[in-house]
Image (tube, rainbow, N blue to C red):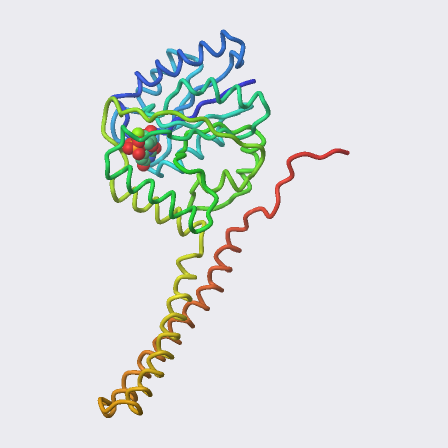
Length: 311
Ligand code: UDP
Ligand code: MG
């Protein structure tokens, strides 16, 4: 089998050569053991870096024929850089991994074994996040839990370190969404899939290229691209306010007829505010439901994917 490894790089000049070296030695071993073909490739995608990243990629390409590079015209973000790489390589299976190699490249071997067993997708799953800061660990895990709670099919603690086969890659091309969240899309494609676990390592050089702003944008994109739950929440809130108004009406009657505490004008002023408020939010929620449908339709995702045929 021919393997391609895709690495998105954004201002990674400090670490690129080291990463290329480590990856090459893993590839060499796999080639020597006959697990992958000798024409397997390592493909760096320069996501509009402003430092010397592209020069290094060019030098590496000249030095080692198995290394290739793609330069994007500007910074398109991690997900789009991955996609550019995935759609440019030609291989039986593609592994995507971050250029800082915080994910353990020694499990690539296991990924290949799983591929040979017939799995079309192999997800790298972080067994521990000791290398992450507490803040990142807590927020990231909360994000995965929240996504799963909303019914989005994602793999807990799996980032974009995964192997996908050529077939899966072909079907990925049918997902034409602009707001890309690969972690949600790959499970939607289906096919036999499995996971391999590894410990996340610390970043050896350079700083994280994910600023807080980028992370928040990414999380919001993930949620809103895969779920209309936030819209549905409006319906629930509207309904709750409406039900609360009914109870308040009952209470107002009780105060008026069973006690001497009734304040003249209170019920006729306050109750309509809550009542109309509740109906209004409920109506917004219902409109939201329809907008949610339109939104999902405009994605025109494939409605089915055929794995095999016997004819
Ligand atoms: N990256 C990218 N474009 C961006 C931001 C990041 O291609 O706009 C790449 C970056 O070079 C790295 C990977 O995405 O290879 C993950 O980034 P990083 O390691 O900085 O994130 P962290 O591991 O801290 O989440
Ligand atoms: Mg990293």
